[in-house]
Length: 318
Image (cartoon, rainbow, N blue to C red):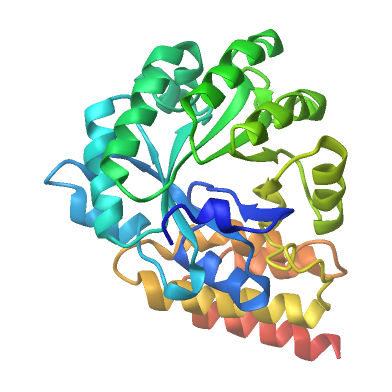
């Protein structure tokens, strides 16, 4: 799978990395319906991965995967080039298909540490990190996910063109600044501004931000001349998004039930069952009776209870 990005046909769709969302269970649920061209793990701290006391726990917690999820990219975050190099070597050993560097996370703790979106303010360090990651990744492709700026959209020229100059295999740009978080409309015109330059340098160039359907993704790819779209929140509660299918209510609820069971089987003793709740909350919405069912399910302590509540609802709905 070396440098698989170059072998993907366009337009392409990818699953974005989301903390406590895009774990192996969710990725397998998506793959069982319609696998996107690329999927990413939750982001992983290079500091934690490279520390002897936390390494094995982090691998089990964040870096478990199934062959059906390929091509699968491990996303890393941090601020020390040497640790990125070391962590990238570990990603190679774990059998992933690529390494992605998080240069866009707006979380206050991540930014105050100097990682994620904080790197937008330090292009020279960002380039050092990319080079170190490439060195550690050896034959695996190194990609970057970022935002158009930190405080202002006026930062985009220097920042995005600087990243293009560093020549990652792929570059995903979220069309908001760190300051804007998810509160402002996505600046798709700014994302599209750099497509020609990136693709000219043989960089796979993806846009990201508030895409909630396959049709919208394809439309934006064509309109802004992108290689593809990376979908994040639009997939939560909607693993059908990459297929373009609209599931029936029964299919939606049975998938929620399957998701809870698979989560429990996969992460028993590793992750608390409560971590599945954001998924279940997203599945159980937008239909008559959803509120009452959701209130029941949110109190569930295990997959059997989730299954019971859902089966009772489906029985009573018939």
